[in-house]
Every structure is written in structure tokens, then in C-alpha cells.
Length: 517
Image 1 (cartoon, one colour):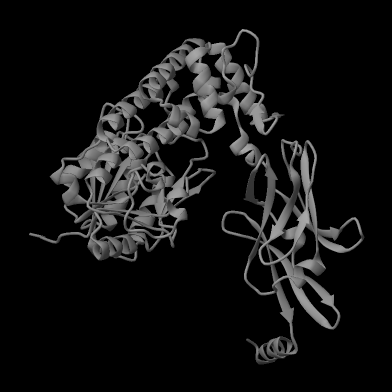
Image 2 (cartoon, one colour):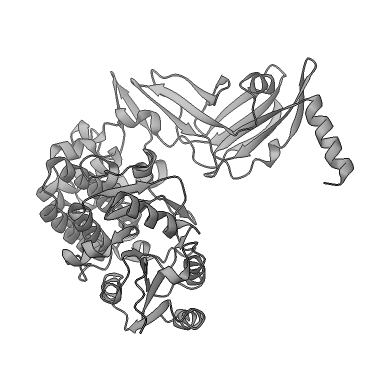
């Protein structure tokens, strides 16, 4: 009898995720921790796309590691995940989405962190793929061993894609609420982090790649709006019963009203039938009446604050007009009034509408309004003075704002140059002389767009899909030569690399060429 105790049980709930399932399983069995330290439990939740055969093929290759369980389709990941837990024997448990994948060192690093810190829950940095957005706020502060819902952005990282100590889950009998089709991982995670002795985060590696399928058929994206409303109401009721610390409760509610309720009032609302829109409007009104404090309302982004307020006091048609406006214009136009900015959404200062100006106040976000509406164009050219320059331009939805100081593009350890803004585009020209005269080194130096208005300031990365129009360029200043080129960072951010060409470098390259290396 094999009495091996695995370090980690990886639980994968599978329903129609081909061909992503293949990459998912490949990432599990490529883990540097080794298959002998893993138990993998895959639950085939009634797949009809060949996923069951794919699981069988992997089980044949790794019979000592992979167990496949089968059941009729349950409608969501909660039931399969609970079933996987009942069969788990590992010291730790990790729930892996069947369309997602691990970084190769993910589990080895996470187990080492949990063993070192005695943490009951460990988060590894998650990144998105296929256009999926993953909130990065909990990872922005670097590695920590003391995360709480009250004292960190943990409320924005409530998915179950974490390493959990199995003894914690069993001691407190933490399971997924099976009455929820979507969002069932959030009550599970909230219970776990509240019960944990310690929650740690590791940020220096891409542990988990969350993939959005090309057809957006992930459960998160395909749940009908009325079902999502039901799950959101259940989620917020469960969270309200679990989270008692005032600051933690505030943080969780800000997250739920911004994210889960926000999703109800966006694209899904536009696509809904009239009876569904009425149900959503009434449901959001109930949620606001039960949980929305004024402090939470003030903390919400303006698009959610306005939409929730309109749901409380307006009609489904009012909500529809606001959703259409946001889909087409985002937060434009911004109207200046003394030292405040307001978004002129439908209903703003409209006759017969009891909608307070505070719902539409965008002052704190005024410099953050969709600066970039598409990838930047990056190429070599000449500026207005005829100098060789790196030319940047990108589509934007907004003009300069009243009282705004001139926006600029900044190069890390280098120059700042003015940016021209019009209704459709932003453009900047950075002289190559200035790039070279900045701090010249080989390391990637990112480019950001900075603006200040209404007493608020912010910086944003300039991102591009392609920078080949500004490839390597030889540039001379006096007797000195430099190689200058644009480059892209991991998230598409545009940057520059400047490398001095010295006699020593030329000689070294010549020696390598002559030696055939």
C-alpha cells in the first residue's frame, strides 16, 4: 500500500475546456517540484468536448499521480471542487482552473514559502492571458507574510487560486457553496483567510496564468445576468455574515460593489432582455439598501457609483442610457465646475432627476480617464525642430482638461517632453539626443505618460503591440556612438534601451566573429 503523503493536491474541475485543458495538465506535470510530490485530482463534470478522453490519456501516463473522477454536469465548479477535497491527501491543496496554467516553478516556490513562514494560505502572483485582466494591487507591495482583509488589498484577490493548508480546510470544514453557479470561490477564500494563522504573498515570479478563452466561455464570462445577480446576492449575504472587522468589511464591500455589482450593470446589462434589466435594477437596489454605506459609496469608481445610484432612484431605461454612454464614451465628457470635475453621464443635472452631483464626481479620477484607447504607434522620425526623434502616438478619447498643466511623457532616468492632446489622439516626440544624454545603460527604461489636473496627478504606462518601427539605430553625439532602440516590457509597456559603442566593445565583437562564436 502506498502511504506517500503528497506535498500538494492539485484539484482541477473540468467542463468543456479543450484545448486549454492540455496546456493546463502539461503545466502541472512540468512542475519542478516533481510528480512524486503531487497528487492530482481531476473531476470531469460531464464534459462533452473530448476532455474526458484527454484526462484518461494523462492518467495513463501518470497513473500514480493523476486520479480522474466523473460525474454528471453540476452547473458550476463548486460541487466538483468539494468532491476533489474529499479525496485530497496532500499537506496543501491548490485549485487550478482547467483553462489556466502554472509557471514551471509555481508549486515548489509556494510550498517552500508556506513551510518557511508557517502560512496557512499563500498567494502567488497571477497574470492574465488572452486579454484577461487580473487585479495586481495585492502583488504591488512585494512579498509579505501578514496579509489581512483589513490591512491589505487582499479583498481584490478572493479567487481560490492559492495554496491552502489542507488541515485548515478540514479543521474548519471549509467548503464551496454549491448553490452558487459563479463566485463560489469567494466565500471559500474569505473563510480560509479569516481562519488562517498567517496569509502570505509572493510576487517575484509569474506563478499562475489566468487565461480568457477566445470565445470567452469561462464560467465567469458565460453566466447569465439573472443568475449572476442571484450569485452576487448570495455572495454578499455570506460575506456580510463572515466579515465582522469594520475595515475588512468596508474593503470587501468596496470590492463587491465595484466588481460583482459593477459587472451586472455593464456589458451584461446592455445585452439583457427588458425583464432581465428590470430584475437587475431591482436586485442592485436591494443590495445597495442592505450593504451600501456612504463610506463605501464614496470609495467606488465613478462609473459604479453613478450606476448604483441610478439603480436606486431611477428606472431601467435610465440605467440603460448610462450603460450605453459608458460603452461608447467611457468617462467623457468631463465637466469642470470650480475645482471639481463631473462626468456628464445621462441624468447628470437633468430636469426631473433626483441624482446628486456627488454620484458623478470624477475629480479623483479626472487624470485617469482612458488615456490610451488602443496600442501606441512607435517609430523613428523627426520632431518639429527637425531633430531625429522617437515618435509616439496613441488614440485617446479625451481632450486636455480645464486647469490642466501640460501633460508630458517621461523616460525613466531620462527626459520629459510635452504631449500634444486633441480629441482623438495624443502625440509626443522625444529627441534621440535627449534619450542618449539621459542615464545611458542597457537596462530597459520605461516610458510613462504623466498629467495633472484638478489637484490630482497620475502616471500611466505607454503600451504598444509592436515597436519594430523603432528598432536599433546608430546615433552619434560628438565622437561617441550609441545603439538606441525601442523595446516592449512584459505587459507591452514601451521603453528604450541605449548602449554606448566603445572601442572595447567593437574589439570584443570582432574577436568573437573571428573565433566563430
